[in-house]
Image (cartoon, rainbow, N blue to C red; front, side, top):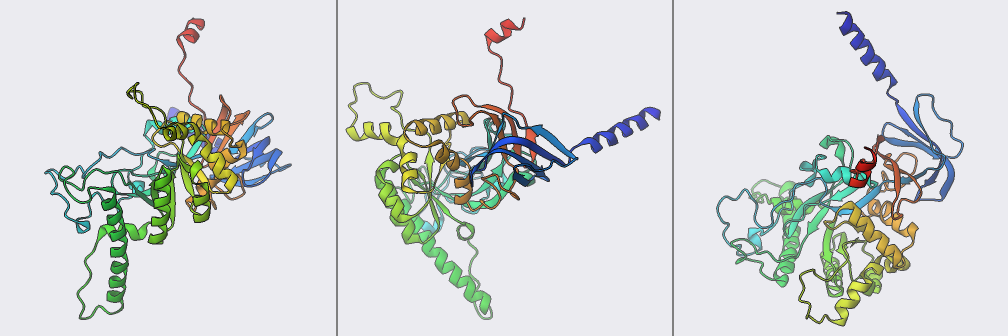
Length: 431
């Protein structure tokens, strides 16, 4: 009995010692949204930034981190990722036990999953989450990527394992892919060409306009009217706050800019490896873009005797200059890992910096700009009072070749970067 009482007393004491707040005192603070504060204190409480500024008193109940020699940044954001989800096989849904009949037209909704929400499927157990967080990523815009209309993405924090705490905003947008994969039945159905895919997307939005009108008319006066049939594909499109369109090359960028204007939907372009050739088009159109850091390279198994075109060589050489060109034109852009690891993504960002992108513009594209693009800049992306406490604390520059990360803070919870595995040489030295 006495042992149980001692255990309960120790538990109560432990609970009482858990800090209700946190303070990082006298650190260099890179706010991103404003000036760099050379010596300031960041106060955190209940997962939010309670205050930031010089000479702030530290509350008595706060867990104190002495910030001398440290720099505090907003947490990094991957603006287009599959982090936190299981990959869905390409093609028809796995639930279809028997081969699907070929799609005959848009009424069969080929390769369409517009109603699905990735927020219902994400999981913090994805091992990539801890790896990305250890490199300074505190959030990601995660999207399903299989299908013409792949489904609704979500803004996700890379912290708490509970799904209810992972999601910051859902839906974040509808992911579109124009890759040809057939409309069912082994690729024999509609659409079977790029023109067909574009025609299908156009038809879906024409159908959506009619669907909304029919529902509104029925809701105003249902008596004596046949109710409109429920269409979950169109319901999914109606819920989408923005559309994400693929646009890698110059011709694709030009095509998608025209198509997005025709659809009259908020749009974001992703890919943009030839953005350096399309800066004037992009500036005139005014759409934000997400640049893939998976820069084009010569395929490892390419025919060594194959003579590449001058254009292909120029694209490979100049693609990493795209972010610098966009920044110079004042075009809002963010970065995407595009299926790479977080480490490879950062290497891609540093390559863009070598090609003319300033450190300040690179940091903005990894923090505040993705928050602005997806409509969550009022709660994340910079170090400001009232925003979510997503922070990275470093010794030295975060975007350097080998950043020294001390702490990662997600939703006000402190994490340590994972300890890298010891090399054989290091193991030998410890013997």
